[in-house]
Structures are given as C-alpha cells and as structure tokens.
Image (cartoon, rainbow over all chains, first blue to last red; front, side, top):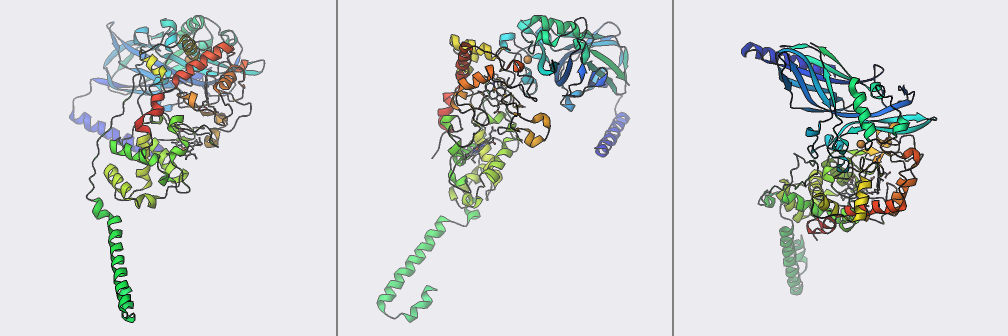
Length: 245
Length: 351
Ligand SMILES: [Cu+2]
C-alpha cells in the first residue's frame, strides 16, 4: 500500500513542479474535506453495544449515512461563495469520507463557512438521484418525498434486551427539517493544499437541548414531527471543525 | 482401401457392387464435407456485423449496470435468447436455463426441488443468489453459470454450424469459448426487465389503484407496515444482504462468504416484483402463500441477534397489522405483477 502511493505522490509532485515552472501560478486553491465520526471524542466503533447516551441508555451504531449540501464560504467583504456540490457520506464506505475540491476556492481570506445537513426544501427534489447509493436514500412520496437527510441506525438495550433504533431524518410532509451549520472559523486560501476536517459527535444528537429517549420515540420516527423537530434542534452542536494548511 | 481389395474379387457382379459401394462412399464423403466445411475458411464469409441495442430505462428507475466490454447488440441478445432455451448448454444432462427459469412464472419455477431465484431486473443486480454471495457483474455470474453450474460442453457448440455462424456474427469469434456464451446470456438477461406492472402504470399516472390497493400502498411505504426501506422502489430490492428475522438461530446466509459473524442470517433482499407468481417464499421456501409471509411480518418476527435495525417492530414480534390491513398489503403486492413481462414475445422460447 505505502509504496505505490509514494510513487504516485512523487509523480504528482513532479507534475506540479513542471506546471508551476511553465504556467502562471494558480489563482484558486485546493481543499480536501475529511469526514470523521466520534462518540465521546473517540472514533466510532461499529456494532459494539458499548456506548451510553445522555439518557443513560446503552447503545450501538451500525449505520451512519447522510448528505451535506450548499457548502458556502464567507468572504471578507460579506460575500458568499456556494459550491455547486452535495456530498454523500457513509461511514462504511471509506472513499465517501474524503472529498476533494480541486482548484475551486479563489485565493483570499475567509471569515467562515456554512453547510446544510440534508437538503433545504428547494433542493430536496424527488428523483434527482438516478444511481446508488444516493438513490436508496429516497424518502417516500406519502411522507413528503425527496431524500432522507440522514440515516443513523443501531440498537439500544432495554431491560437487557436489544431493541432497534432508526434515527432517520428528512422533510416529513414537506416541512423543512434540514439543519444549517454555520462556523465562524477564519482561514486563508493560498497556493497550498488545505484540509478541512468535519467531525460528527454522535453523542450530541442525543443531548441538548432535548435529552433523546430511545424508548419514548420508538424504533421508527420518520412520521413523527416531534422527533424530526428534536433532531433539528439537537443538531446545532454535532459538528466540529479543524483546518490544516 | 476399398479398391485395393477389388483385384481379389473377380466376378463382375462383385465389380458392379463394389462400384456402387465405391460411389456411395465417395458420395458420402461429399455429403460430409458440405456438412462440416473447413470451419475457418467458411466462417470468414460470415460477416461480423452488429447493430447496437439501447436499453430503455423507464422513468424513476435507477441507472442500469451496463458492460463496456459487452455492449448490447440485437445479434448478441438474440443469440443469448437461443442459448437460454437450448439444452445444448447442459454439459451433464438435458436441461436448458428455461427448465428452471420459466417465463410464465417470472423466470423461476414454483415446484422445483430448489428455491430458484427469479430472473427479474438483473441488469440492476450486483449481488446474486439468495445469500447475495456472488458479487460481481452479470457477465461474471454468467461465466459461473456456463462453466460451473452447467458445465457446458463447448465442443457441442463448436460442432454446431448454426451457432458458429451466430457467434461469428455477434462476437467476431471463430471458436466459441465460455466467455462468449456467457456474454450472450448476459445480454439476453439484460432484457429480462419487469417495469410495466399495475404499480408502474399507477406511478406514471396512467391509472389509479383500488381503495384496498391504495391502503396497502400506504402501509408498504410507511413505518407502520415497514417494507420500503429494504424492498425499496423501483426495483423493490435494495440489493443488500439483510436479516429479516425469520429465525432465532438463522441459516448462515452471507456469513458463508464473508465469515463475519455480523453476517449470520443475512440474505439478499429479494425483489417483490411479480411476487404473486413466485411462491413458495424465502430462501428455503418455508411459506407457501403471501398470506403466510405477511402474517410472519405481522406476528412472527424473531428478534435474533443480527436482526436488521430496519425491522422496526422486531422487539414487538412484528408490525401487528390487522387481518384487514394484511389483506390490503397483499392487494398492493399483487399490483407488482407484470403480465407483459411474463408473456412478452421477445423473451419467450424461440424454438
Ligand atoms: Cu427511513
């Protein structure tokens, strides 16, 4: 594994070297975005009944799949730059955990960025995806159509017995439950490669302002407005960020 | 050889006889040569000429898995159809694919000794067989079918002048190998698509469902009935392996391939298209009617260790649908029957 990567890297670097000698310097920089997932700040271990949430329930995680859309950079003069992308992330698919934005960010200083977990109503259009895995994130028409924002699945213990939970969110009955995340983290885009790490802390879905009770909400919550609203509220602090230059 | 014997036989009768015999022999030689001409020479006159076939992908369906190496052609599909229905493929016995995959029964067989996986919408399939253990392309699974399951005797195909010509025309080969046979079968298989059921017509706004069917539709697509996450539209399968809670100690399923204990009891979500026609149900055929299946999902679900989280009601033993709701759900499942698929001329026996 290591060796071919190194060779590729050297080839790539020499290519870059060649370019910078002959062509004017790039005016846009590269950004890689990495997605990580933690429970109590430790990387998620799947299928282990070993976590305890704010409500005191022991639980395990099997699936984490979600969409991020409308990634927007705030420029210094108050402008906004929205990238025309959506991202699909699946903890079980390593390739989906890193997104490369090559030459898309104009050089300059930014005051922060924002994005949407899921899709805003205007973007949440049925049948916009025609291939898997995105296609399989559909949200049934009789519940409002469009796509799931997120599928977080696993089990919790009640009286020592495992019970399923499906923490699925989406635009129930066309209500916009998408979550806007705004981060005022200033950074400068220059010639170098930049990396932004977006971490999801699973515990925070279950904590504040509402302490999530698996038993109260039950295994399926797609048709439960109270649950969808709670997820939207609790989503305010699940993401944290690190920028590396 | 025959003539060298002649000097010893002096009677004129014998001479006449031997002349007749001799000419018969020569005549026979001639017949032989017209039947099996020196193959490559004559095949050269068979043109390799194919016309591309573009697969119609209906509205709402996902993109199909096509093969760059094996593009669809009218010639390839027609050849695949012949092979599918021809016992010449069987290296051990006298079966054709269609012995167990019967069009009128949605390309499976209801009373076979094995639970046959129907051939429905395989152009979208990435995991084959009940346990999903064969992962790969349709071309790869067909190579397995030809080489291992059917043990096809390729010399039988190569000795058949008609097939030699068809393979030359469709694949530009003088000698048929299992690859071309599999590719032709894969091309035909890509046309075994069921996309025109009553449900599809409803979806396209061409007709409406009856009140019972509509109630069943709602149950299917909401969390009360809880079917749609796995049997997800439009294929009515998500192409994943899952444990739907049939047994507390289930059969090994996908575990047999992955050796991951998490996979015990996982089988590929079967498509529900044409489900009315494909009894008995489940990988072991344990249920003979849809009533039994729906009753299982209502009250018989086992909360087994690897049960899929998407079985929302597993800790309650099922979705607890009332008999009336169960009947409505079955009415909806029957809207997935596609008689166009089970009778379409182009998919039928060409012989
Ligand atoms: Cu869902």
